[in-house]
Amino acid sequence: MSGRTRQPSERGQLDLFHALPGDFASRDAQDLMAYPFFSLAKSRRIAPIDFRAGDVTIRVEAVPDHGMATIWDADILIWAASQIVNARDAGLRTSRLMAATPYEMLTFIGRGVSKRDYQRLKAALDRLQSTSVVTSIRQPAEGRRHRFSWINEWQECTGRNGRPLGLELILPDWFYRAVVDSALILTIDRAYFGLTGGLDRWLYRLVRKHGGRQRAGWRFDIRHLHQKSGSLSPLKRFAFELRDIVRRQPLPGYLLFTEVEASGRVLLAFEPAPALVDRLVLSGTRTVVPSGTVLSGYREPPAALSRGTGEENRAPNLESNSQSNSLARHPANQREEQSRLAAGRPTRDGQRAGRRTGDDT
Image (cartoon, rainbow, N blue to C red; front, side):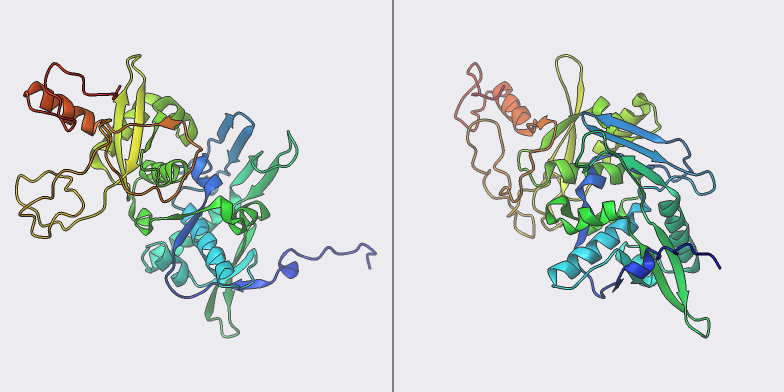
């Protein structure tokens, strides 16, 4: 008999947290929204992600058998974060050891519940468990690195008669600490789960993280976005795909547009979308109908008040987030002022052609 002391398993040291029933807000960890941690492709990725910006370093490694965890696999982490935050807000005790049924997980993230969907869920859990991450984010000492997998382990549970009881999984401490810190969590739109493109999903999370609900919007350099995405696509292809996203406008709650500086540098800009109105509008009515338009669409309210600086009066600033590249101006009003001047009509400030439109440079 060996005299070596057997170390207790991690599972035996953790209390079991059962998933809560019901439909509640979706939460995401800001670190996962801001940095390249996942593959954006549905095809298997083996090539690692290497990212460095200032003091932040990230390396994500995959194994050939499963490939790297994808941004669709990350929906499971969003489900876990949402469960933990909801339970914490309800005064319940949470744990890194979680138990749930596949049905609960799949329905929360907007997936089907067929046999194929269950198989895909298990494959996603395998990728999350086998993907290895090394990062300096949230490390107290300079130069220190933390290595972990997105799921330490997971298993299927069955009863004595062999009937499936659900799944159990253990979250890594690095992720769990981010979730229980309310300052590191953001609520996301449930429509996010309906986004089918990997780049669409990544861009929404980035926009939500950096811009929040800033009424003035923000803008990013395309090259910087390419680096921050971890995408294997060449820059030219990446920029083409971003322009296609701008054309489609798929991101819930945000409008996207591009700007080209005098130097030729291309920027991707965004701002919160205006409030939704009824879809029944007259033929010929502008695509973006001002909030407050009557349901029938037979008339529009007068133009919104302006400060005379070529900026719109946007929705109240419900949340501020200073972490971004730079502040963006929406060009829509500038184009409107220019067209008014060209036609000889007064601008909103009462100016006519030949006079300056104000301080909108």
